[in-house]
Length: 358
Image 1: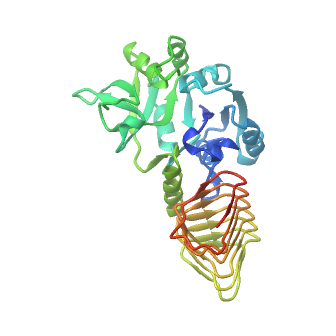
Image 2: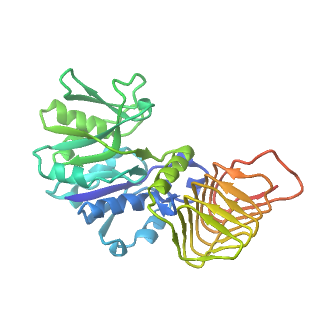
Image 3: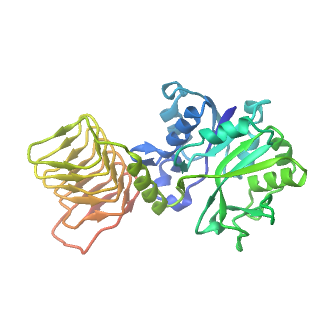
């Protein structure tokens, strides 16, 4: 079985962060979201992987993953010039897939527990396709499954105004090559895209065996700022134990499940309360509080400030902020410096290289 990671899309709901890189490279717990996807495929025994690149800084994707060898996989890059739908992206993989079955995994999805058992189920079955479903509160945001009275899958609807169920497609699809014949028959939807739900619907209507399963843990589609903060909390909660490779000075306090990478320093009169992940070379303090569910990237400097429940990318400076920064997503190379004004609170969504003087 082969793997296909979709790494395109414009990420409009995540601007300004996606003005300078693809949304799938935004880190959760200091690791790009799509790296969790790639490692999930690898851990499921799938090492021949294609990454479908979009038109938002594809060179950053290739720079991070290279040929895949450092992750224990082989990577083939395929270019999709602009977003034209999941089915269009899948169609570009025809030569890569050959006669093999394959799994399509959206690069901005996170799934607790991974897909290993679903890979094994599909491999051992006679199914032509299999979809993974998750019960959600807002099914109109997703592709949605409809079942008959016997529980058989009969229809898939993309982002319906009136959802036929609360079971959303998770963005993880298992296919045999027959799916390419269905995609050839598609016409663009009202969104101007070739919908993978329409292709799977054609499989159903033509009598092919389309199975489904339900995810047993949490699933996150990280398409919005709040989704990323939620995913960061979920992933940090999965961290089993503290790991301190950096330096904790006398007079500093580190509590709970805190990961501190090498060359990072927690200075005196500072408190770090986990779950927290702090990247290499980052300096925390003095006189600083880092609260639970915060991820801080590499070579950051946070001094005389308080941060909680936030995702902070690389090389960010936060200095002399009198009120706590919370529920924020701050892009790399940003600088937030306090002045004489004392605001009632701060919540930020900052793109790369922003500078805020308070």
